[in-house]
Length: 130
Image (cartoon, rainbow, N blue to C red; front, side, top):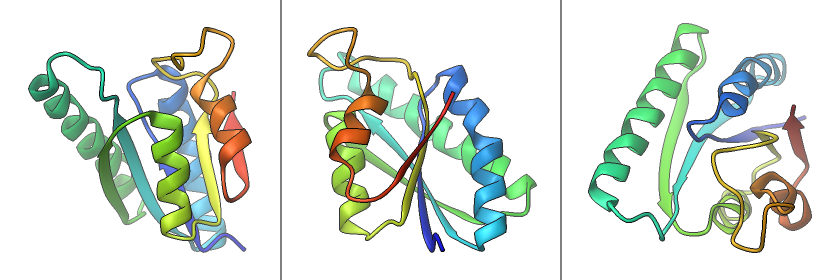
């Protein structure tokens, strides 16, 4: 059903809460899991932000490992919604699972969240976890 699942993560509580649902889907479908974190290009201290992203990916991979799930991690720079959708397209992902509200909103305004943008641009189904 879902051979490859992309799980975009950030430091938000919603992203952390979505992890359990991702684990259930991956186990049920015997999917390949790729954890993706996107560092926004506009972040001022890129060095420190990069360290935070590395730690975030490490912690996520460890959590899934504790659930018996092997996961790949990928770090990218750019506009989060576009990077998520482009990455999913490049690897022919079957599903994107993400939290509904992350740490940031798009530049277009507070009403346009990254998850909303991904829903509209994604090349595959998107499951948004409240």
